[in-house]
Length: 146
Image (tube, rainbow, N blue to C red; front, side, top):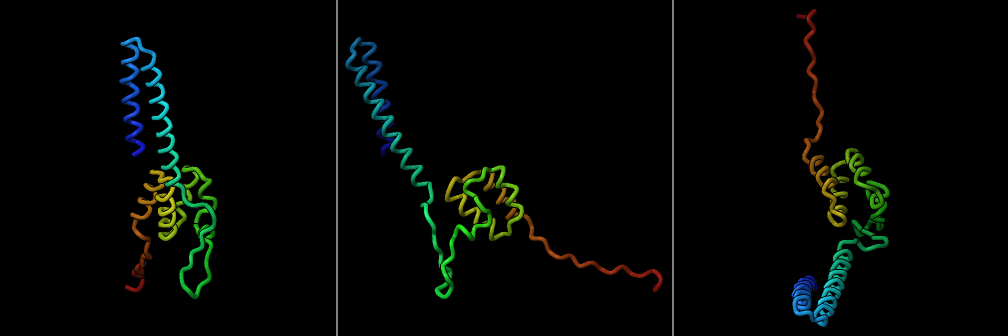
């Protein structure tokens, strides 16, 4: 809603500016400046609200997995220490060391936070690779016993 208000105010500002310049009426130019100011203010509010919505709640989150188990600190269970303070080039090599559960934890945190395409793409690649299995070696026949 505020975004529409900002767009309407910008359009009004442009119209008033043209009218003020063509008609040599400074009142319209001043009105144009005030409309532009209201548009800038509403865009700042929209930006603030969007950033606030994307950021996870601060503080310690306790997660209880079972009524019989004690609560566990969710930050302590995360597979990459200091994840929120690392850059993409520091995180991507660490993804290779994680198992499927760890990759899914990183995926959840990344999609809830910054949603960096490089990290999410690498996780997709790692989750798509086949799981390594044990290969059974067949014993070679002994040529002396044939």
